[in-house]
Length: 174
Ligand code: 2AM
Image (tube, rainbow, N blue to C red; front, side, top):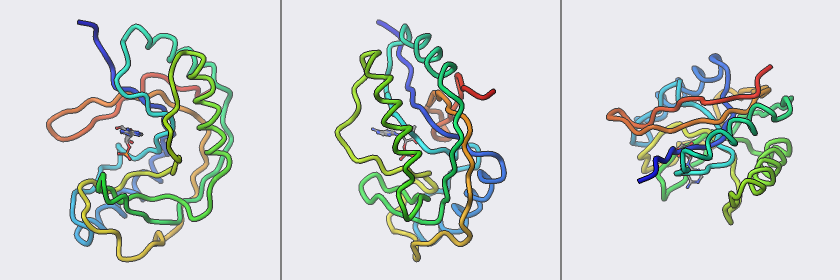
């Protein structure tokens, strides 16, 4: 049996934004049902690879470290709800071109390593609450958050007793 790792690419905010999002999640959870995610879990998933054979990890680490430095900005000003996976999330009212381009470029690079982009629209979001049966009572984030992103991370998701734990395996931070 070969070992696999559950991997994805993400942008991870700084502590100020993580904490602000966690406060929002705590505040909304009683209205939406479900449980708020902790500050350390806050991120936006770009390419989600899922279960990957461990032998491919080295190439993914190299790709991550060699990725050009990012210099983008994303304003989080909207709350949304995905009813099927039961997630309340934070995102933006207007599409962020830099994020969409980054995701597309990432998949282009990954395709050279044999990974295939999913046939789906990409809605950049930060999950705030899981098992949320109801949307937030309003669709605007109480106070918009301006997130300057400057590095890409390759992250491993490990399922534990208390939910998913995320571990950054590589990044392209200078
Ligand atoms: P979520 O926040 O919307 O749940 C680790 O599981 C990360 O990958 C989470 O951010 C999760 O998104 C995302 N994820 C899990 N399964 C996915 C899938 N099939 N497609 C895209 N992203 C996924």
